[in-house]
Image (cartoon, rainbow, N blue to C red; front, side, top):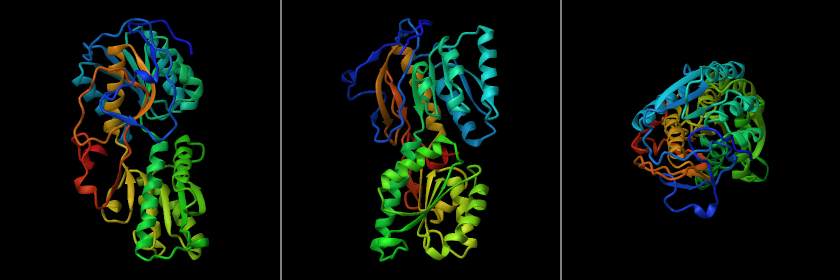
Length: 383
C-alpha cells in the first residue's frame, strides 16, 4: 500500500501482536465480516492528545432530510464538541456526482482539515474523491463499506456492519424456531422445516447482499426459502406493496417466517400479512434487520425481533476513531466490534483499529423497556 506523505500525523501499521486487552475504549473481536484494510494518512507525528484544539473535521455525507442521517450528523457534532473539534459538513441528495463536486470545491478553497469523515453516496463510484481527500488529510469512512479499490486511501473504517446485522437477524431467527418447536408448532416446509420469505433491499444495493448472505450463513439451512424478493426502496410502503403481491402467491404453501432486511420495510410486511388474514407474531414470525421506522409493531409483538443499528453511536464512533488516530498517528491492522456496554466508555489514547464496527444487539418486545447502551434507551439510540 502506498502512503501519501502530507499533513501533521505519522501513520504506522502495527502488527496484531501490538494489541492489548485495553484496545480502543472496550473493543471486542468481531464475528462478522466485510472489514476493509486501512490506507494512507500522512507523515507527521500524532498530537499526543485527544483534545482537538479547535481543529476541523470535515464531513461528507447524504442529506439529513433522512432521519438516520440527521441523527448521525447531530451525534458527530456533539462528540466532536466534547473533544474540542469543529465540524464542517457537506450534504448531498444521495448523489455521488454531487458529492464529488463538493469534494473538489472544498479542496479548491485550500482550507485546512484535520481529517475527513466520509460517507459515500455510492461507494463503488467514490474512490476518486476519497483519493483526492487522502492527499490532503486522513480519511475515515463510515456507514458504507470501503471498496477494494479505495482501501489504500482510507485510514480506517468506523460504523455499521451489514454482515453483522444479517448475522444477528439469523441468530434471532434460530432462537424463534426453537421457541416455536417447544410450543409444538408444526412447520409447513419439506422435512418439517419452516418456510421463509425474504424481503431484501433493492437489487444492486451492496448492504442487501451482505445482509442476505450473513442471514443464510447464520441459519445454515434451517429454512426452506420460498422466495427472496427485492424491494424498490427500503421503507414501509415498499415493504407493504411488495408483500401484498408476494404473500397471496405463497399463502397456500404456508408461510412460517418472514425476514425483512430492516424494521421499516418489516412494518409494511406486517400490514400486508394482516390484510391477507395472517396474524404476525402467531401465524407468521417476522424477523427484521436494523430497527428503523415504526417502532409499534415490535412493541406489540407483531415483529419478533430487530437489530439495533444506532446512528447516534455510529456518529460518536467515527469521531472517536479519528481523534485516536490524530492523537497517536497510528492504526492497528485489526477488525473489531465495540461492546454493547450499558455505560459509555471513556475514550483511551490508543491507536484505533483499521475496521471498527458498532455493536448489533437484538431487541424484542420483552427486552424493549430495559434496553440500555452507552447510557441511552431505545428511543435515544434509534431516532
